[in-house]
Length: 247
Ligand SMILES: [Zn+2]
Image (cartoon, rainbow, N blue to C red; front, side, top):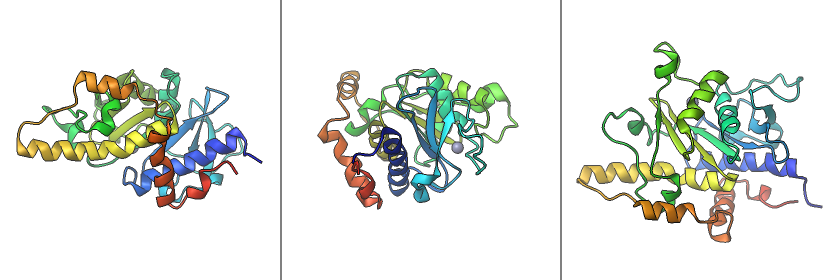
């Protein structure tokens, strides 16, 4: 018998955690969530645990304000879960959210002169604009740089605005998707895009994707077999291929 929609989503959160850890988008830190399939005011995210070891029973259901739906939930939770609720609140189109500290992106979060741009085809749908959020702009220079409350989560979501990706100064990034596959596939290639751009910058002038190319990539249906292929392959590579099917 096919598993129900909630179990499917919990398994997909596990798969996304394992893939993104295996692909070095996440390390001991960072997290990925999926919006509740029936109730847009809730989302699923792991308890405080490193992504590479997340299992189905570690997935917690949250209200958008970061409170667990089950009042009996007493396990430690991610301090930065407010990133997810902040984005879901402001972006009804978003079904999955990732927060990562991948260091390939960090130079672009602190550079005063160079903005991250899409330079390889796989990330054309990350869009032309990658805003940089500086927590100090609104919350002063004595924070830990972590997003530890809803006010900070909402401010970050406001900086992300309608974009797919926002960098967080000296900290990491937030990336969003219309589905978990859409998010995971893009996120796998975002650090690679940053590495290619850094390498090209050392060589001199370089070419970014054009507005037309970005628009064409954004029109692709991410749920077709061609763009779903990575999900199953990466899941198997990460040791969770058995969770992909509905049984
Ligand atoms: Zn963080």
